[in-house]
Image (cartoon, rainbow, N blue to C red; front, side):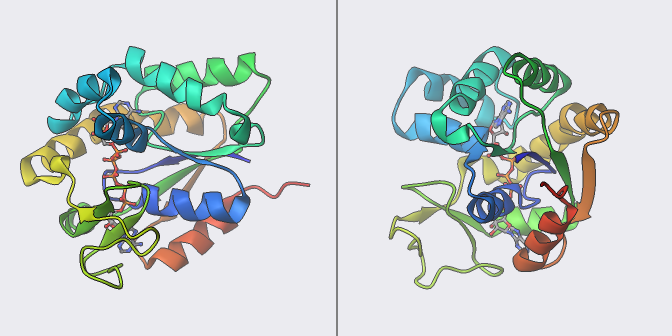
Length: 217
Ligand code: AP5
């Protein structure tokens, strides 16, 4: 199963992608997490990406597409993947179409997570991530860790993302509306879009996402 998750910052893409990946037995591929991992390892790619991330802008396609393609080519993604945060503009969507065509693969669904703007602002304000693995995501109120400041999954330290500051979040929302939302039309033309409300609790949204996926033989 090959799935793309689309939605504004804070919609719950990372949260749902991790759960769907676990349920479907396929990897969760997040370009945001790949950038953050590069950043914490002090790589050149991480250093380049940080300047854009801190301003809430998209990291240039020539960096992002190659990184995503390299991750999708690894053996664990041979039977599918959940893409979270990629593609993020029309050029990336076209690059993904080309990559899939060249490797004889197709997408099964594009899940469009709908959440009102005031709710994404609340979700981002309370978000805490694990320093050891940024795909372990918590919220101080909606999904609190058992022990304050400590990741339930691996015991890592929880922190607040640098780009979760209010003015950067405003910029990320603007970039989403201008650059990312148009990919929904791109995929609607391919008959792949399933729009679901992501406003309820995490488990309800996962059930809704699973029910929206096409049935496979
Ligand atoms: P990225 O890391 O992809 O951030 P984003 O798209 O802005 O999305 P977020 O991670 O903010 O939110 P999310 O939808 O994953 O929500 P989450 O599950 O955490 O990208 C960061 C930056 O990297 C970009 O700005 C850009 O610079 C760069 N980048 C990344 N990909 C790129 C690309 N392809 N091209 C170019 N640049 C790229 O949930 C949010 C909070 O809500 C959490 O606290 C969670 O616990 C809580 N929550 C989740 N679901 C629920 C629920 N149902 N009810 C209550 N609370 C919930």
